[in-house]
Length: 227
Image (cartoon, rainbow, N blue to C red; front, top):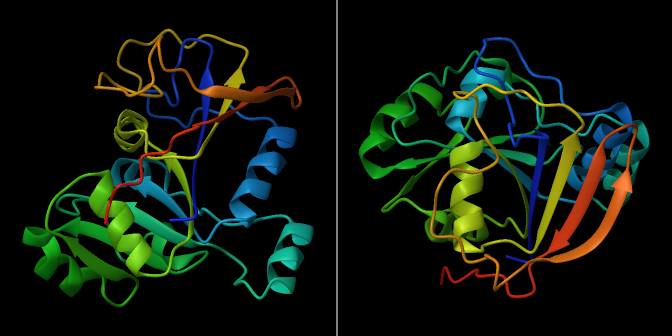
């Protein structure tokens, strides 16, 4: 894998979404544009099944100049969309996630493979994983030709990649407000993280994009040991 880029937007108290039912707006237009520029340089965008069920994200490149740049490089308009799931509950073929944007890859456990292929093969490429985890995810996607991957969430997926140190860059956008809801998902849950007080990420830049603070970080020693 040539590059794995994690991207997340959160509140000041670390929440990436609300638990109140409605969609939480965190980003600014300027931040959204900047994030789409990262998307436009990727082959695929990965999210967890919970994010698909909750948000039905399009995961497209929505700016004409970025689309034009992809076409000039011989790339399709939109990156491949990847969803990781254990059993595929709540993934329906008529959902917007499968009907809009780029082609879809569903990564699932081997036990769920027959059912998901029966339900989703008309709208997605369904690929089984003999074991769960970041190493298998990267191995499968690399085998499918993905060289530049963007990971956008949610909490469980981000926790896995952050804990494994399986990324080159981390982009964190911070909205200047508190959410204050104990049950709302956060950037990451507990985990055996490789990067702690004695092994810090390298801060490349800090920017203000329309009242959103964006911190770009580099992992000097990405752990992509999936072969």
